[in-house]
Image (tube, rainbow, N blue to C red; front, side, top):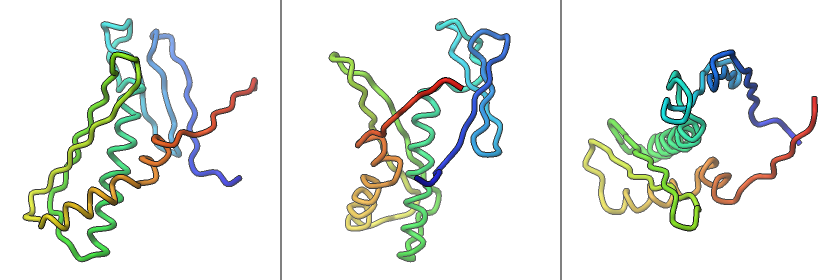
Amino acid sequence: MSRVSFATVVSTDSNYLHHIHAGHFPLDTDEPAKLGGQGAGPAPFDYYLASLAACTAITLRMYAQHKGWDLGEFRAELELERDDEGRLHVHRTLHSDQPLTEEQWRRLLEIVANTPVTKAMREGVEITSQRG
């Protein structure tokens, strides 16, 4: 197998606040105060949505550049909800400040359904754990 990404997380003495290194970028994660954290950073599901949002924006920007389309200021809004059976659902809404045709929007929605992170989330990944 070849490594795609690498991250580490280290606890602090501040309850749920943890320091993450994703690649060489430092990030923090925490839980909101209502869940016992300090709200000092995004919660894990915030990062889950952020990774999908980032992949969405980057993939569509690459595709639009390849096609010579001007997306202008592009925005994706993502919402994570849990249904009555406890299953998670992500809804993604795309926006552009440029006048795109119906055909362009149709194609962008096809592309966004198959971004690498979309596929990984939809299809699932094998997760293994071991003692270090």
